[in-house]
Image (spheres, rainbow, N blue to C red):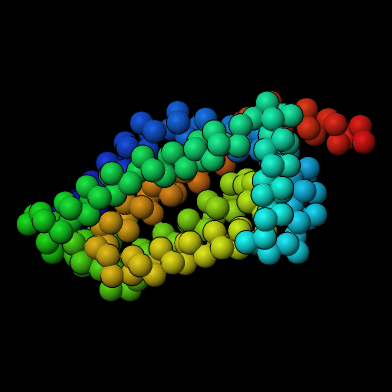
Length: 208
């Protein structure tokens, strides 16, 4: 019965390997966005003191959209590409939840420090680690959000970790494994592609 935890880890890795090409496209687009980040920060700084509901915020979004266009990028596509890997993992998340709450075989199945994968982690380690890994992913991912919106987004890992405190430990194990795979893929690809995607930007800075 102790193998059920490793089965969840292995199945999660298989799912994420299958989605790796899509995540690769997302990482490349994120790196392109990182190149225009200095220009974007100038725009965001100009509107930093403007309240979130102020109509002038629309002007900021228009300037950012124009910046994207100048670099051959589309703001809507960038947002979709960034969200798509997460959206595609959601059906698997619900499938795992269904399996963990319905399957008789998983009741009482232990894994490492977890006595029962179908119940909450008694030490809350998996939901906390899931939240930490999600926070790390957000920090690594370039964004077009202004600082105020970024602060709101940074609360998401805390909120999700809180919501999943009492979720089945196997569900948290799935999400934690998926996050760790994503972090590993992003670190490796950023090292391998850094010179080709960000090289021109780096040369321009050295000339300046």
